[in-house]
Image (cartoon, rainbow over all chains, first blue to last red; front, side, top):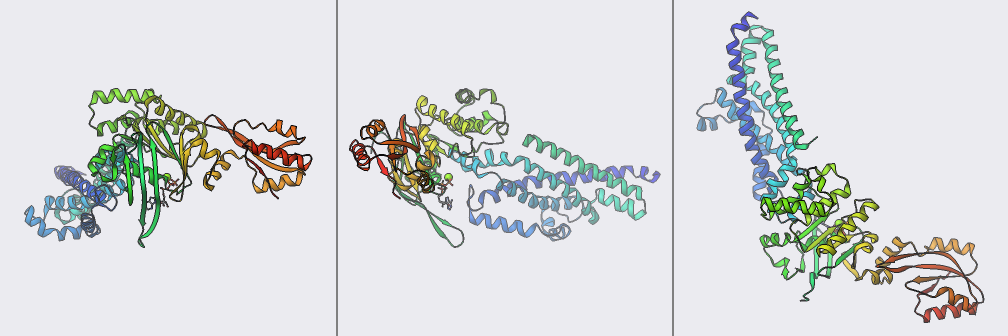
Length: 219
Length: 342
Ligand SMILES: Nc1ncnc2c1ncn2[C@@H]1O[C@H](COP(=O)(O)OP(=O)(O)OP(=O)(O)O)[C@@H](O)[C@H]1O
Ligand SMILES: [Mg+2]
């Protein structure tokens, strides 16, 4: 415990790093994923802005990228990282990879929930004379908002999980801390404290997500 | 073109191509139809007859394979999609499943078409309040659709459909998800929409009761074709097509089925005749005059557009030549009499 107290600043920094990685990945990846998901939904055959070519390309891209295990995805991204952010290690590299991975995961969640919107309400909006793009943003997205928020929450938990794993490849954050200061020194209280911290972060995110989804669904 | 016609379909056909094997379904087959301004026009047909397809052609949600669709002096099929959107704003539509936006309040649902049309906030609020008052739901303005009963949801649907003050309202099975009492309320409301606001209504249904409660004229559809068209009274008092006759029999249950007839024969020894009831038939007097006793064994009489319609089946006893003479006299009077053959 004494050792932990002397390491407190490191622990704080690890939490900060985790927040940094998770925060950027969830927000930026979430927005990118939303955009991708909207494109997937709107361009699919028979949809509002059906476009075979766009749908096939985007769909294929998502299908290829999504199943790649995250750690391998990070490795594969290294040339891209060098070209864009100039590094392949550290928190920024992990954030870069995690943002893209989150975007692809979110895109499917968004697409699935938009597809589940009742065709009848879209028909009602069309019958009112609304334009396809306006239907997408003023009808389809609001109708699907509750489930989409729950989907985001699910992705958030996954991102926290992956950020901890990424710590192992030198990204810093709570995963890295648990290994370096915990298990490698046989200091189990540190490990368990880290686990507890991650649980709190996940629970807080889940709680917020549920709360927002409930407001969107009014239940 | 006829100046009073509001909707006109000219030789419209619609073929859908389905699935991987590109199999074709003929949903509409050479349909011609005219709906006059200000009337309530009903289309009745069994499931799959092509009713929804027909109604969706009118506001251009679906395009015909061949033929022309006119609304007022505009040919829908010849317009660009942008112009079609403009036409849709002047056509209200209501649906079997109401299709309300769950993400919006009752007021928000009614306001939606106004937002689409670019109506300003103050005017929007004013119109929403007036519409909700018209359908009797002003006190529910801030509720969400799932807090309403089916009938209330459809009233919101009607208010939303009327938001842009359309001259035409399309109703696709608007009461099919409702119980009889609620159906009657919604139909009464549609009647008011027609009479008080002067809105032309085209409604489709598979229930004769809906047609006879609100419609002035009716088209009977079967397998993508129109079997017959006319005033509701003419079509259902004297159906010329089998579909129309079937709808009438199912709704009025006034004519004995073969099974009922067989049972009647076992218990009744006299001659069985079925008389169509229209206006006054002078039955009793005629039978009496020819010394024929008439015993009522089956039948049903109802009202269509404030006139009697139905039929009565009698067992006639007495001298055979007296019965023959009585039947001849009735026929000479224009009464529709059928002797039930064995
Ligand atoms: N988008 C579509 N693609 C393929 N076939 C269709 C499509 N829409 C309708 N059909 C077919 O066209 C025919 C007529 O359908 P329609 O929905 O117009 O019937 P309906 O009279 O409204 O029936 P219901 O009373 O069940 O609503 C049916 O055979 C149906 O399967
Ligand atoms: Mg239908």
